[in-house]
Length: 477
Image 1: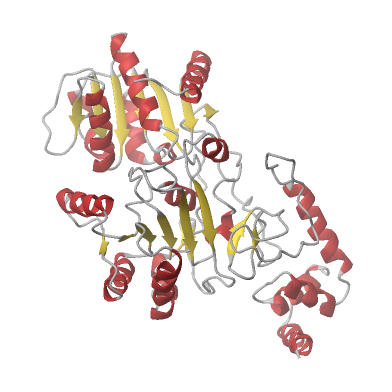
Image 2: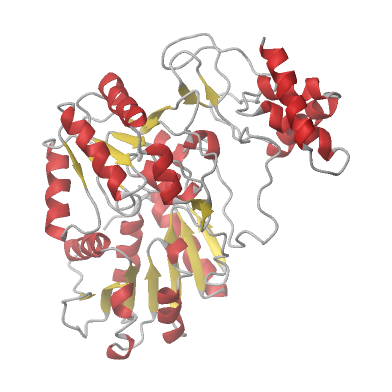
């Protein structure tokens, strides 16, 4: 297998780091070729007489990696339910199966973990602890956990691959266009469980005919005939959305965990062939599944998880014949929570320390995006007109510096300082509520009352909330 130049660079950097430490995590965007890296590392290990295990958590990933190894004529065993144990030095393993068969295999010299942000789970830990002398390499597009746990307990160093934007510019990933609503789904009252929205609460907020109908309508308007994957909250939600598409005359299917492997493969093949235009799912198509034919990713699932958002969009960024760009239909405002998929992000093994979660001063997320008020396309701030519909874009008060030919990372500290200065200049309750309205907050009166009381180191009273609502009504009159 001939590695691309940037893939070879990743391999060299990883080897150099492994000389000093025994556990390295490779970060590379979805579509950068982590399977190619895996095959290269395992084949190199086998040629040197070393034993290598590759750990995955999905059967689809197991089959995908096995097919890639056979293509390179690398004999290997498969550690999976229903498969007989093999003595071959190279093994592709389901972690759920391996953790129950540790005594049946000679210790590997190399362990590679796919979707390495999952590797703090007990099953992975048991495997790594059972083979303490093995070199450990993790692979992930998003080395961060929703629950905030540190990956530094498993890995010593991160080796970063190229950015999404660079891969797009070089033609290894396709470009995208993103549309989002001017008002997102109301998540008031939706609890947070394990770092993301509670699915039960979220289903009640999103599984509504108005939202589903809007999703089908926008697909017909912006993406008619294109192959679309819809990210849903629950299986019931996914089935309702698929039913709505079918009722509108658009062939759709729901793919979910209780289906057999053969049933899922049939749906995915029909999708690739264009017989099915829409697949709805909950989590199955967020990680690992390689379907370059995806032309549209539609979000009906609000998520607090950057991992879910990035991995989900990554499914559609792979180039494919006849696809010039990916269309992202973000009905629930995830881009306003997390920023654009192509933004440069700093990854860390430290995790999120208790008591250090990101504080929100208001309802407006601190992300670097601009939205057209005419067509609702979302893009990087800077142009005078919308890149999609051509409508004039009014410049924001705070401007983002942009160098010719290459986007510059936003100075988040400078933006936050400017926002605090702006809030400090709002002396009265009326000033604060007016500021909240200009920022497009959902609850500017509530925010104004909280900010006013916080200046005295206390919480607002019921009377102060009532007064704030009166001021808001006066301003709206």
